[in-house]
Length: 226
Image 1 (cartoon, helix red, strand yellow):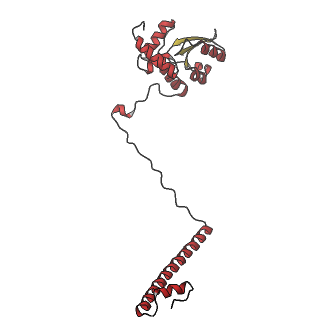
Image 2: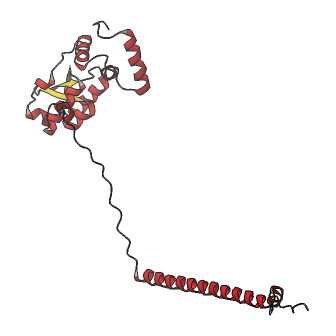
Image 3: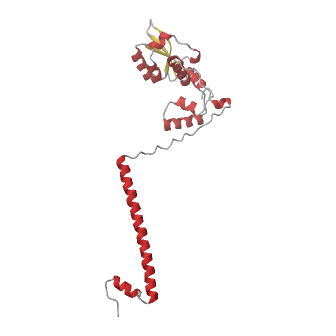
């Protein structure tokens, strides 16, 4: 705010986000777009009276990378700059140089005195990727930045193969099919017989030989009325 890079309203808004989501205030300010990383680094440098460093222009010696393990660099988000072996002093670039507890832990793990300089989190991340993992130091551009749109494809999994029935299941299925066919044949035969009987009754009734009342009485086991 003293440097004119941040208004009180922006600071209050960033503090509200920090209380809501946690994290460091400086990181929140950068994420919200109120200040850029470079401005934040120089503001910290002036406030804490600690030098700032451009890590992209630093090439650490090989022995330094072996002296300071990558798991420490990743855990504490720091990167080794130089070492004074005679005086057992290690200089680290840090995005949070005011974190005294982290610096004490680093001194314990390395058995070295720790000095810090200020750098941005993204620069530290690039340096770790470049020198510990042999990755590129800059961010890879996406195809969209070159006006290229990559086609997208939807993958539809193929249908599962048909299940092969076991010999026992196949035999049972054949029996069920045969029984179903017999039932259908019996139903058809009964229907034909019913039609034939109905036609016979109609003929007998027409001739006066048998009435429907006599037929139904006979079915019920009662003698027809005289």
